[in-house]
Image 1 (tube, rainbow, N blue to C red):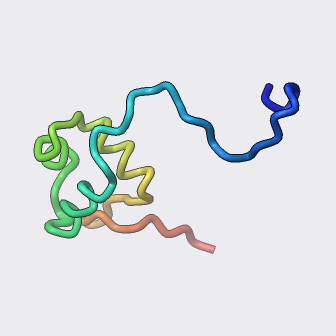
Image 2: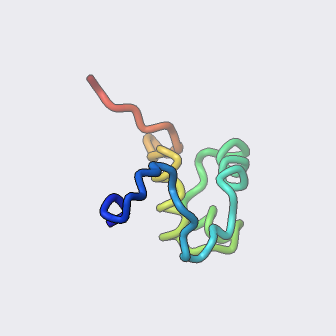
Image 3: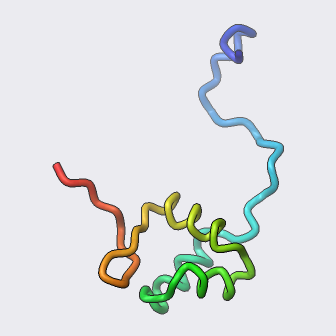
Length: 76
C-alpha cells in the first residue's frame, strides 16, 4: 500500500498500538539476576501477564533449556 502512494521509505512508522509497559532491559535484569525463574515469576515481578512475558522472551531470542533461559541458537 505504501509503495502505491510513492512512499518508498523502508523505516518503520509510529504505530498506534499500546506502548510496551516494560523495557527489555527490565526483563533482562531479572534474567541476569536469576535465569531459573519461570514466566509466571517474571510476570508477577513486572506486573504483566505470562503471555506478555512469553512474547517479550521470544522477541529477545530466549528459550528455556534445562530450567534456564538461554539464547536460542539455530543448528546449521
